[in-house]
Length: 168
Image (cartoon, rainbow, N blue to C red; front, side, top):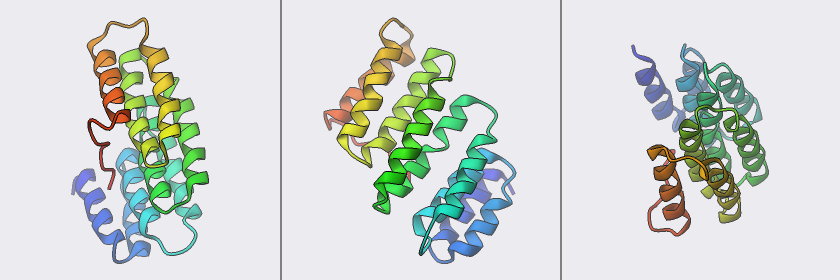
């Protein structure tokens, strides 16, 4: 079974049986998909999600580049925000943004920051604006089309001209 199918199966199961979903997610070889599946468990688990959240962070840290290490955390930000655990969401967002600073080239960094901005919107506008400010700084001297698109998309998100992506 492909890693994306394993993820999808764990995500569906998380709604009914978060313990079984966590076990299934832990068996996903690819850390990118494992992190996403575990975020579904964080979203639905009854009680303290911190043990599963630490597994998300571990999986994200095992990703093979800074882009994935930063972006895999976006689902965790959204899961904590949805649970109303904004302190945890902000902490993870801050860590993810710091990791995104290491992403190269700048066009890929811009893409990572747009994803994190969308996760930040699930916390609040001020959180999203701080990511937006960094994005503008990253792209200010860059003519790459992906930087231009990222800045345009981020502006549209903040102006509520378009909706942020759904993580779940």
